[in-house]
Length: 440
Ligand SMILES: Cc1cc2nc3c(=O)[nH]c(=O)nc-3n(C[C@H](O)[C@H](O)[C@H](O)COP(=O)(O)OP(=O)(O)OC[C@H]3O[C@@H](n4cnc5c(N)ncnc54)[C@H](O)[C@@H]3O)c2cc1C
Ligand SMILES: *[C@@H]1O[C@H](CO)[C@@H](O)[C@H](O)[C@H]1NC(C)=O
Ligand SMILES: *[C@@H]1O[C@H](CO)[C@@H](O)[C@H](O)[C@H]1NC(C)=O
Image: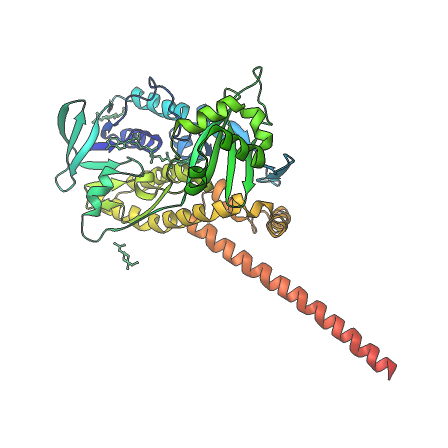
């Protein structure tokens, strides 16, 4: 089968590897130049948190160890309060699993190098898909001033949140689609290495929660941190001058100012406009036996659960296992859409919810109590009681099952809490009654 994959990002290059290993002829088309020779671009999340689902997909193509070798483990969240005091909340005090900070460019390079080694993947960089006839499997590309036509038996759209392939599917009957921009945007900043060393403890995901906004930082291989400030657009708009910026930072992120450096802070902050964040839900993910979308093209999500890439890579794992079954292509694609949409919608919702948790709840006692209780029960019953964050990040349990699990745990805790309260009340009333009997 001739397979055209649109987009050589993290999901597209992984999908290409899988299709080629099954003996297909794969053409990988990418709008941008080859990332391996391109300069690093600010603003497209320079690093990402890799967790179980992504690791599993990389392991399946023999690349997990190579990726982990240059990744930096993050054992938990390190919270920075307004006064610069820090506290640590481990992700998994029981079995010590962690997230891995990986460079987007490095990871993409590892995948593209692997693609290049396979004889039946052809990479076409600087090819922008401009239109496609998904019924006929015909695609139009633009390369500089040149127009190129190509055809394929199957078109796989891995072309990200603004997918062109998806645009063509939206027009087809029976395709459900919704997108949502949140009112918050982000800018990327940098805490550089100092004398060749990290300026903060490296093995954590650093968070500065500030109720309605927050800042995070993930470690890089070169001992710097990529810092991301998330905030409502109106707050960004209120910061117009370097003075206003420094005043804002000295008020809310005073401990980070000397680490970033005032000059660099001003330079990086004003270099780019705040970027938008988009959540996309659609269904189904295929069109007949002709087209399919994967990764952000199918389910872009806000980045607060660190699952966008992981979920996209998991798409590839699930699709590959279906392709290995003795089914017709049409059946494979139908089953893929059917088994995936609910889970994808769930993780989109969870990602929106986790923003509230990260910027606000992590500071609250109720959250910390719940976390403590979760950890205690997890330690006592590691198979029976897996907390939500852990099932999402450290297992391959379907996302909707993670949520069902959490709902059950909530009910259980409420019931036990109510039960304990009632028992306490009954004991108290009983004691009063007996005291009364005694007295009379
Ligand atoms: C700030 C931020 C932080 C994030 N952090 C994490 C994290 O910690 N963990 C995590 O798992 N996920 C994270 N994500 C999500 C993650 O970046 C995405 O889910 C992931 O990049 C999706 O990969 P993809 O290959 O589907 O799409 P993309 O990475 O967007 O790749 C799409 C590719 O298609 C190409 N393309 C687009 N249009 C065309 C066209 N018309 N023709 C040809 N090529 C085209 C693009 O150039 C690009 O190379 C984060 C996202 C953001 C914005
Ligand atoms: C693709 O590569 C595989 C393994 O290297 C090989 O078995 C297969 O015949 C190739 N297919 C095409 C169409 O080149
Ligand atoms: C589209 O959404 C509606 C309403 O939620 C649902 O009933 C329908 O089955 C969906 N269509 C597809 C193709 O999934």
